[in-house]
Image 1 (cartoon, rainbow, N blue to C red):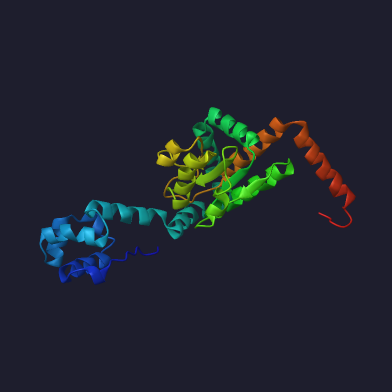
Image 2: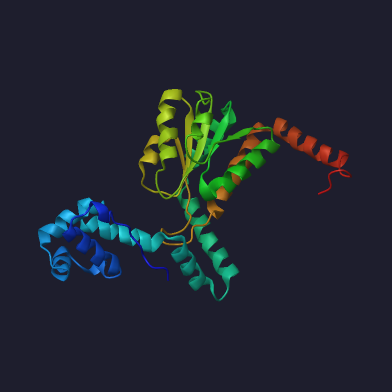
Length: 278
């Protein structure tokens, strides 16, 4: 199992604080079982010195540091994959399919039918649709773009991170929709999208696996999915089903014009089959 690791600002610490930091780095696996009195006794400093240490180290207190250690031990990609391998070593495919079914069942319970319908209506009425899908969710945005492009709805992909996001947002206005994926925690990009919505007037659709988040409160429409437990391997099966469901619903809502696009696509395939085979 990969070892936990933390970085402390040793250059900004006093000699006593450096001794505490050195002890903690060498005792990370045991720190969750210690209190400040234990640490002070083992390092040979006062309890007050240990209490003052946490601010310099970048934490509110020992409790917040322990919480940080817990999150690290649960959420590193290597640890998640190790847990998956341990659970699936007998029959990986069957176990992963079973886990996906659980994710889908939980998503079916979480998602609001009213919110889903509002999302379909908002996307249908939008002059332009912008999608922000950072990291692993980029495949979801590509799927949505592919599905909607087939029925004549153009999707504008936004930069995954950094100031290039603003190159898209500067064009978004009251007749537009910004759909974004918000998993794990609120990103700086999500903050910008939500802040700018109030000024530019576009509607926001959030697809998330979070149950509690200020992103949920600030978004116009929220579609909640399940990707697995916090300390588990996170699957994109459920969000992918939601993306497909939005595309199918929009095709049904567009009716004949959407069908005409699909018929034209089929006709073009036949026309150029010899030049562009499947």
